[in-house]
Amino acid sequence: MNHGTLRSTLLRALTLSALVTAASLAFAGAAAAQKVPDKELQEVLIKTSLITFNDANVTKNYTVLHAKLSQPFRDQFTPDKLKDSFKPFADAHVDFDIIAAKPPILTEPAKVDDEGKLTLRGYFDTKPNRVSYDLAFIRSEGEWKLIRLNVDVKKPGE
Image 1 (cartoon, rainbow, N blue to C red):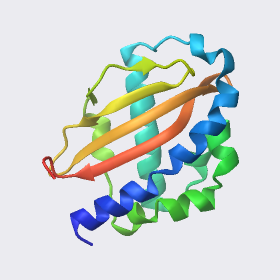
Image 2: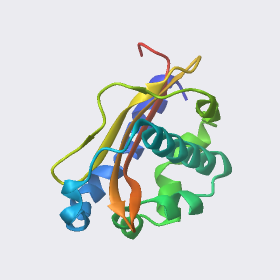
Image 3: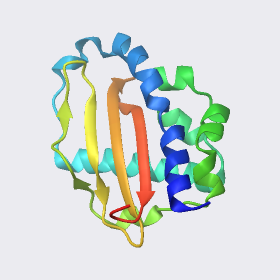
Image 4: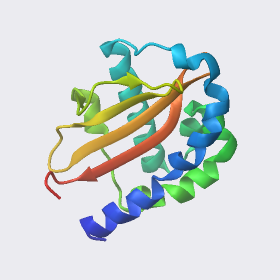
């Protein structure tokens, strides 16, 4: 599978979050008053989310990733549905665990929108492929949990 095809397939697979965003609004409620977490917690959220996602793809076991998702995301996507959706990553043997040793580079400031959704966008300067992310979290079960997971692994400039 070439990079263009892989990228196109991955982008389709990663549109899951759009389907659950509407469902998350019911849970956001008072979360709109949430503050942006400090930079240290932002890095923890980014890295733990992406490493858990990477581990799920490498092992083809999506149970832990599923458990770490927000309630609305879990309600809509079972571990098996996640496995089917992210199959292109597993099939392409995408493994980006190197991000654990790299700092995330934000492409825009972290923000909490009026619906209480925390958005973190950026990339890791990894080679030969850059790992870019677009993550969103809501307060679910007392902590920030994923409601959107978009990851792109490609050569810079592609």
